[in-house]
Image (cartoon, rainbow, N blue to C red):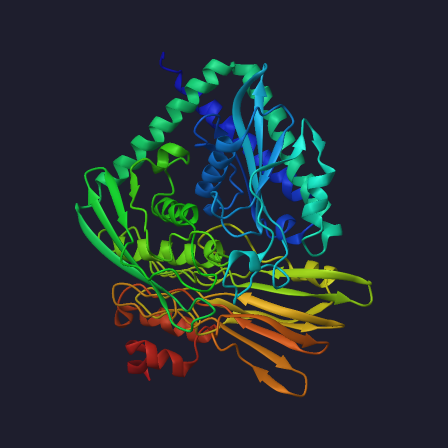
Length: 561
């Protein structure tokens, strides 16, 4: 292969990226569900025709889907028989390269001049796929069938025509089925946009040149990642993270992370982690691996992302642990929660080797809250899904970000004005979770508080969150961040706190009842005694900490009294 002109190479690289970005925009602009259109819980990408490896992903896509969509595309390739132009496969099976059942993948063969060139794929978080509770986040599920409808790779579109029989099976097994067709057509339309834009790119530069560029970009990404890894001192680094509970057995789950740096490779071993659990906090292998990919990408954000980025990362399959779920283990918490604990364990291990490039643990929970009910005023059922931000960890040069998105993605809280328009709820509070930032030389950022009041009808609330028992970890002497808390306030009958603190399901609420949530703050970085006294006083004046909290956490604040 002749060496590509560097200008042509970078233009093709950006062209592939732009194809994915336009798919992202088309998807979110056309989607019906606020969790996709507003919260951006989705992703689009281009994948290799034979291996399913990542070629490019949109800037607006969730990082955790980077790895999992490779595995789900591979599952489609293994099972596809004579794919034709216009075919679209649908799949959400967690054990076939998936996450939880609500993350529904569409995979489409892309043909150029009559030959299969690549696959286009996207993932969208559907608000409901059936199961025990509205929204799919069943905190008490003990088998995957209780979590919703599981779909192996099947052709939903055949040569551009929607298969009404398969669609009817899907719609007959999920809630608010009448509202799903908007998301389905938006997801398919995004792939059609990708076809048009990728065809235009190939028309301009030729298939051979673009293929050569893809191979070169993969090799360069691997080369750049290896260069970053070489700068880490050789050695064995151990880290850990804790999941509150599995939702069924009220005991913590432990992640034991052993990272071995040797030459230009990182080896990850989690074999010392807790065994498979009864509840839905098991993680399928695709999600476990993708969590490590995204953790390393957080550490080295400047390395371009494609399959080459992951080549120097060697992961031992964690057989016999809750991080390698097999059928029929429930998995609804794997992508949104366990994945973030895995990333935290990587950070916790490598901060010892590279303290000037890492940070204390972020809030590390997506704060999954689902509210499902019937709106008597609009005479229709609904499922409202809320995700929320939290504090980032302090780092070597500053304090953590407040109300940042989760570790696994760029998803943001749906604007409360949109949720109040769609659903019979009123947000009575949305405020800073004061005091939640972990103390340190550089403190953690703060989480948020919000209160939702049901305005009319009846509903059921379910949540799968984390960090309710132990806050995000501080590092290098920093303190842990504040806890996640949840409470249901029933009008005239007191307060209900979930026994597992961060996980529960099917909580009946009536008009006038409130759901109160506080999200975690980030961990602190470095010894709190080393924090600048002026910064402590500033935080007190801004109301971030009370004087009493500051005196307790920061020695300089107490000394100044």
